[in-house]
Image 1 (cartoon, helix red, strand yellow):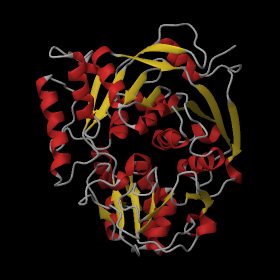
Image 2 (spheres, rainbow, N blue to C red; image 1 turned 90 degrees about the vertical axis):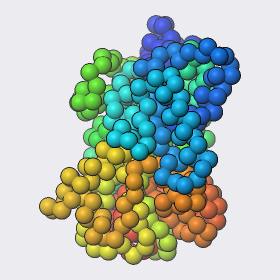
Image 3 (spheres, rainbow, N blue to C red; image 1 turned 30 degrees about the vertical axis):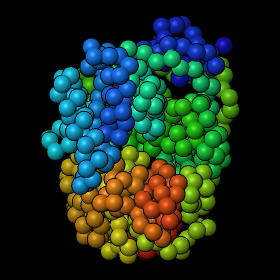
Image 4 (tube, rainbow, N blue to C red; image 1 turned 90 degrees about the horizontal axis):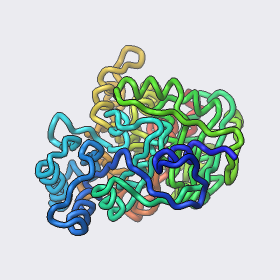
Length: 432
């Protein structure tokens, strides 16, 4: 019996020739990532459990990105960053990307890719549920709690159960009105928010491999919204080119065997799909944009690790260019400082993307997680009572973007841009 790509990577990380779903194994971790929300408690547990002489198992393999609650006057949020700063200084952690310096990167999941930490065939754990984003690079990546992270910090190892795999194949050439966000919303509507609990979600098919690395990361990012342990896409020439531009480290490419066993398989033809939204208050509350068209909005939001990548802005810009001014407050939040710079360089019809957004009346914020998860009261783009928001983010539970009395629709950057121009939820096919 063959193995899936996830099983092969876990076998390698556990020093075995073969693993099967349900087995418990010790994994050697290649990278541990943390940020300002979970870093301080992880460090606290590590110090308590490993004692006064606690040592980091491998400083090169620890990466820390402050990114969640940073551009705020909130003293508790600021204190968390201080704790990370002091820890990095005391233990000489080189891979600390401090806010307020030239090293600051923005959202951890995008920064991991940009800084060359995502290597095919490796194992990455992070103290954030959306760590599964990195699976777009043909690697195993998943989120863990602070206690597990503290154990990795001291030992470089973790005890895990091998997950079953589910396969999602998208056939055909992606039409211009569809994006990776529409594909993952389709899946979520089909299997629900617990349909992949503790399973690997493997994405395959022509439409998937036609996607840029940015778009692939949207698919794997939202595996957790189905309860998935990890999302994964086999590495190909596109992956290799991206990785080699950013890292000189060696890596190994794995592919699923033809005879590999899956818990379930789903197949789609992308030409049969339409632009989708997730209606309040769950990512699996799927509907066609056409069915909710005309819903009045109070805010639009293009940002986050799911929707603040360069590709997302390249998709949104032509619609905002044509539509002139936005009808409701629209927030543009680049996921990384690198993307923020690219907005000034990348052009559409001779005008920079940044200029297009400014001309349309959008508010361009500093790179961070910002309102994707609510944050302190002074967080840019945060929802208030009775807001109706359409957003490129990944979650729309009550209170996720701020007020519990607001309603959040999740959609692609195309749909959000079209809706910003009209002030009501709008099908992007009407604008393209």
